[in-house]
Length: 156
Image (cartoon, rainbow, N blue to C red; front, side, top):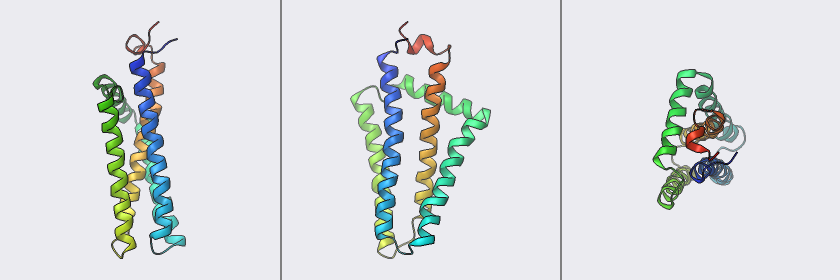
């Protein structure tokens, strides 16, 4: 079975976006560990436990609750038809969004390191975003196995 280039590009971009968000978060954890006050239990709770919980919930709910799964699958399918990840401007837009999120996360860490508010909400929101991106990656694989999508994604 041979997939169309547009589908392969889209699938690759979904994978890269999810992987990049996980790597950005990992780098932010290291930066937070070095800069944020509190350390130890506070660090683990605010930067690991809560964001992981948000990631797990935002990953699993759309896959377990059928109406949410259908909505997210429709969004993923619409993103493919809109050309996400299939052209240089689209890829640059995706990269730009990830870089903007990373810059915001690092800015929050820097502010907290200088005595500002602890960025618990930002880390949890980023964790939720990672969960949604991972759910989209999973749904891309589901769509790929659906015979109804084959005429649009395969070259058989």
